[in-house]
Length: 498
Image (cartoon, rainbow, N blue to C red; front, side, top):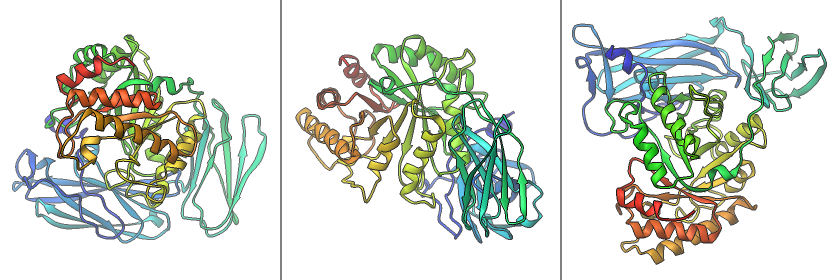
């Protein structure tokens, strides 16, 4: 029973690239086991076939055994390096597969050699080999991403021109594109919600006739009003070691606090990369929170943390958008946490462009009338311009911009005051609006928790941030985060009218 529980959980392990790459730094603590300490490890490899991005996917999962060759599980504090001879490698949340894991993605035929090195525990290296030429799965695939998009992928990357023909439900044929060599995917953003489409993909003499793709029904329109007023970020863990483990959440207490604080919306983290953070065991608890908030007129919004511009990752965000509780309550928008760095979009091969490309494809998939909140890095506090972060491109596809204006985390001030906070919040708003390049609603991301070296903001700073944000023209302020918010901060939020 314990082992089956942990098979559904997730903790961060090491990010990798196609070349050997060090894992993110970890705490110096030794591994935490469910069972005895590991004496050796093996690697389970799963051929996942080919995806709509045109990649071959190989899943690698580390499995551990104690000195008696009995299975054991590492819950925390392991450290692995993952690499492959070609393509790219993305580390996975440990609890997604119940153990340290990574996915190898390649877009050309041939041998794949993956190397997995265990730094902590120090158990040596395992090498995994496969050859995509022996994989039996279909090499041309198509799938719906949302009510307005179907994506087609072909493997290997084309060496000839690719012609794509679409056949709709009335057998009307239409040439969608003729793509040059070097391509591996095509996104059809002209489909109609609820329709059925077949695709014929031709490369030279090779013709692939794909099964019909069913496109989802249209989404209920939402708008920026849902992300206005006072908000709060709420996230939970699927690791029972953590203080915010989902089983420790009290839905009634959370809803009562939201009501007392007079919140208008709550952003709930539903995905991390391609990992879904509402496993079946957590669904009753999370559903109770969503249902309870909605029953009091408080808007539940999904919160996704993208990691790569892949069909799999985008599909996780779509799962959040389409989510319904057991009683049918929907989430009323999606907030995309568009950050650089290894834990976020830093590993995407598209570089900074990945930050807006992800949002663009999601916007095309959901259509123009669904709420997308772009949670962005802060241009004022982080001294960022367009060359360092694509504010203008992100603003093009967002309904609302939400800068992470964590004033005590991102400044070197030793002495804070309400007057200083008001000045900073006003400049924060005007800086982002200028960088956006267009008139767009802004909801400030404020700070309650003690991130950084300057500790918790006192109540008068919370009030000052709300006053200044509202006076500057922001539609709201959302605070990070629920678990770190102190009673006096909750009182300050509750006492402010917005």
